[in-house]
Image (cartoon, rainbow, N blue to C red; front, top):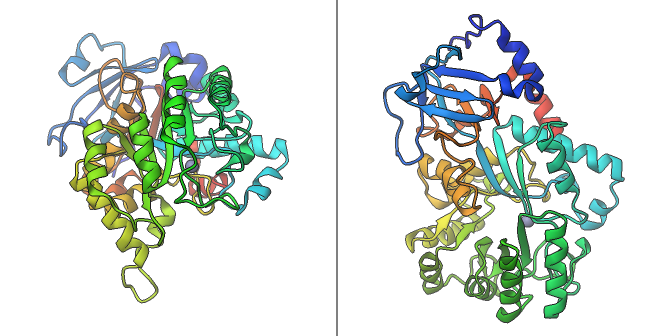
Length: 436
Ligand SMILES: [Zn+2]
């Protein structure tokens, strides 16, 4: 594939390198590429011009050519442009190499801050232009968000949950937001809002990562979950509910959580051993979103050493397919930061997600773009390629609706109008190192 010709625009490289400072002077017209509109199941055979000015998409299609004589022109023959990706569940402060909460908490603070910056940069460079951070202990991800938004460091747009509300000694209680009474709930929610949280995270059930916690156990009565949702709603926030056990899923859905994280339908015998199709139908009817955190780790568990499907694959696949069959809406998420799940590896998660849930590439891509943006309440900012939205784009060399692998190491990542090609981003090994 020919390289992108920037020779006609001598100011281009300089503008790109200076990035944020010269944001106001950015005005460019992308020509010759096919643009994926998220409502369509396939790419149109025709290329479509796309104009970006400052940090916005100005126009797509013939309208992009109107009054564009001043814009820098970039020829992108044979390329495909898709929206930047969204990972709806990450933990920037967690190091995926460490196995236990005790090890995580022991990381020296300067190292942790540097690692969080490196993770954010690696995510952006891998094409993740937005991520929701689903919990940490000291609102460090909020501080990182501020540095990213100020242009001091590179990283995706972040939506932050802050400290997850949990029961005393419950899942992730080491992050400091144990609650049981309505007063404690109100205070803990207020603390997250004051710290600048965009979402409230509730640990509706136990989890795997916390010693002494059992994933299938419900941590709160439905009335307590309703208190969390109400306190969040008073501040204009929605609730992301971590739910493994089937009872906890039901309570969180009925309490009004907006996204159900994991939705493992766990019972006595483990994950996906208590599927409840009537609950799935109810979930579809209420319009709650499921963020199943299918990640690179799942991708490594599809077949065993003999090449046979694993029990895990068969169970989780059935769980996801049943939800789909009942009309449950999915968004893409990875739980990046948990052991073995590196922050930039959303694409591996998407490929696994398509496999487990029997999704077409276009469905997986929607779950990581337009659907995720809608679920997260940011569809007026990002998630699709429309005039007026943030210029969060990936330029790739083949059609990801045919093969999601086209999204790997995108030729160019555009974030808020800033053009990050491979020469700016560096090569693969840097991504791998930064993932740690
Ligand atoms: Zn998580």
